Image 1 (cartoon, helix red, strand yellow):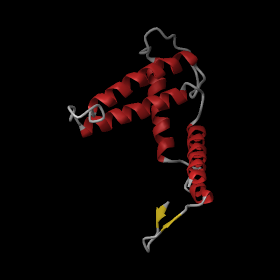
Image 2 (spheres, one colour):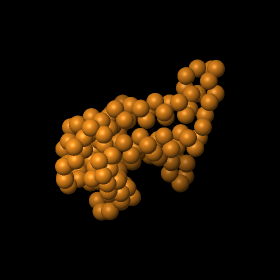
Image 3 (spheres, helix red, strand yellow):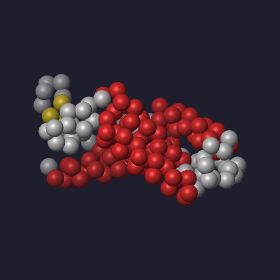
Length: 144
């Protein structure tokens, strides 16, 4: 539901949602390319301990590095939860807004790494996310 100019609510059609997706270069695509360059640098300089570097074009399907980043994501989620403990109970008022934002950024970066090492491109993950949002929207509308 969205607010119209006269204050009433109206359903946004699924075709309207699909029009919001821009198939050309997006901010996400740019960030994704930057992160692939970071990963290529890390791999080529041997900074991944225990991983043998093989020249690979990114994105690539590498289950070991994908699994490594899934573990890293779990750690980042813990740091995210630690930055804002208001969810825990009435005794926890800790909320570090700037820290929380940086931890959210870390989570998104690690999710990009998981995507990269699962062999998916920026365009593929953007389309998958858009498709999933539309699917969820249909489920919501079916319950209305």
